[in-house]
Length: 477
Image (cartoon, rainbow, N blue to C red):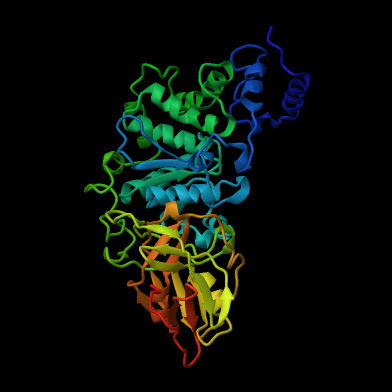
């Protein structure tokens, strides 16, 4: 007889007597000890734990720690659909890693299954995230996949995918239950096999818990979670030999998707990025957004001026993300020092293709008491970065904080910036690890301060006085 810890059995008994077992969606029928789906199986499913500390997962990449991965099952376009833990909610310390991963993947369209819009905008650092510049939809769905509210919300999210060709990401908080169900549903729709669907779902349990196939716990979790959920959704008792694509289509029609929406959804998910079906060409935006990013040789600014906690203004929601068709930049931490009106300052600064790049809020903080001061704000209604020259800057926290070297994450980042009410699409900007960095000389010309270079000390100079005195040398770019 299999042994089950006494305390675990006692807990289940108390929950059963108190009626609280309804909190466990998988316990729709009475649990029988030692029978399939009984107390022992519940113990195997629930007695797994994970850490929110990155150092506890040395064997994982940053993307795996964020439970981020491409969906690569049969029928799915390459590099079209990704799934992950929340790129914005810091509760499990995976948000910055997930945000960097979706930036690197060039995600343009996001389905957020967990948050309401108010919740989303309330997260510290949301305005600075790459995520804030995507075409996201916030659905705020619960964990019971069988409810009318969940199904109506899911239909809304899938219509968002169908209406907006792009590179997609779907997430909840952990990227596990809700995302697991939706990913499995889309995998089935596109022609994945039963084995592929289960294997992709269970990859999450490796990323969080280190579980791999071929053991009792792995099989029990798969059976009690995704296999059971799909059986219930599709109304069948057996999946292995079923026509999963047909069952998925029937389910999606049942929650309200039209034939045209299904056709568009499948076309978008099957097309390769850069084709006629997914994401827009480099200077275009997904449909519904109405704003076009700059031409290849230019980029607008701003999106993530400071690390996640630092609160900055987000970019245009529907902009095409960095990098489609643009050559990879040469990036390194800048070897130059920085002087602002004669005072040495320390700031996160990158040299990209021979030019110095800064975060906008860092620069606003450096110049806050100078004649070149400017404010940085965000218009939530239009999702636009607003800069007003001559205005005092209000810190949001985290300015001038230096992080680890993020050179390897650099991608071009289209972003609209308005300076004194005028839109500027001519300013160069790169996204590094979820934060936007602007070319210093561009900003000097746009905001009214001088940029120079002291060759003797290898120092970048920012001069804001009424009559700045340039230093000797002209190598600062």
